[in-house]
Length: 257
Image 1 (cartoon, rainbow, N blue to C red):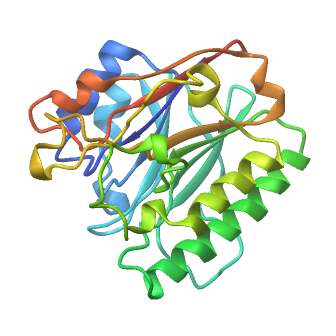
Image 2: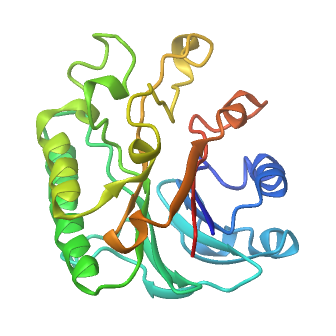
């Protein structure tokens, strides 16, 4: 089972890019973020024609998450992160696909910090930790995939001072990511590549793609039941180089399930 996460950065604007990658990479499950489309604007027909069933939660102009399944219909289990009924932002969706519970998440960016957006980021992260603990306790095989908007360690960002005050690298979000790992989740990409420099996002500005000035923001955390089933993992970097590309590259894992 090949499971990918891809911050598509506007699904309709980059639909051709997405469809081309789906055709080439043939992932079984895809977690998408930053749809930037209302529910009725989601290109369900085009994706169905490509062989993918889908569940999604859209939002006008911003956010939006989806889960695609090749040759199957994902069974929706949640379309919001528990813990705050007042939070209406489309940042979390969860579904069962072929016996695996899969979440697609788009964590808050948190900038500028300090301030209310950073506070929201940390509150959202706390809710994710609490829900992740419940998923672990279920004993089911689970994958938490998405754009966490956290650079876990200094080696996950190019050498620079330009992000020094950015919310993505602050100690508090990094501590939240570490708490998830301590719960019993495994960072699948790091499991596969324990020593390599890995980036999944390159900003459009200042020739950061051309300079390989990247950050690792997109992560797939797998529950204990799946660690021994992890066969491979990777980043489809070439997708970032295409015309009209998202500023993120797809990240994927292969599980022997």
